Image (cartoon, rainbow, N blue to C red):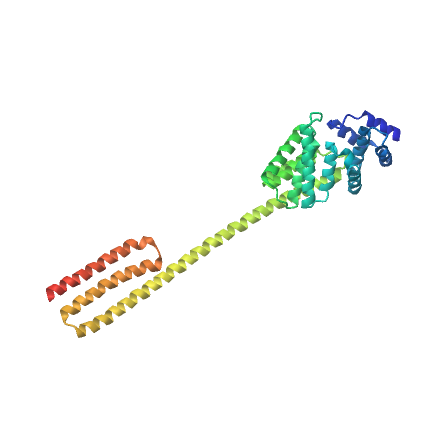
Length: 346
């Protein structure tokens, strides 16, 4: 079996081509027996060419990932980091190792490894930049960060959309890419298109390959999409009701203030009338007619001026300035009449 594996690894295209990963995935899928031990033997044999050893390494990574052996994946990555660190696919695997933890710190490290792997395949002419898995990995990590309520800046989110759309253009029949796009659209609040893309992922999924597991994942993302939509609608409804309550509260407050002002105006006016009547009685009994009339008119004028000013102060409204001015003119006119009458009656 080992010779058969070596023969397969020798015939693989260079890891700069997407066919490298495609052929390894197909080989793992069609393998009828356990090949883990033989792959480790090839990887550890230093007499083998570095490319053969890396091919064995990456085949092990695909095998571990398919069998959910993430601890072994991490262990082997760390052991061979110094040897393969310059390989974009190794950086891709390091990204996969850290993203499995799901917390803010490790997801950020995973995102940095993803950025570095993308930089290498884009900038290095020897690599084929049409490697959709690299682009999807970056976008998936961003979606995972959102699921964990980790703050994502606009530039990173825009880049995630750019990369997943690029991956879909490269391979428009791969269901997982549509699911990733849907997860990103949930972040943007585009729930309608998010649902459509996740449903498309379900429709495209191959029933022969981990179908139940993948469909279960897609269904969970559909539920998250619907939940996010309902939460946003509920939040908006609550905010709308709170705004209505706030407006009602302000209206009640204004009504109370208006009522308070009216009461104060009435009390002030009533007090002024009583004071004027009492003063009139006292003045009329102590002064001669001409002096009493003049003094009462002066008091009436002063009362009109004071009441107009009192109304403006209480209501604190500049729109009352005209009525205050009018009251002042009337009050002043009454005082002038009082002075004129006193002069003629003297």
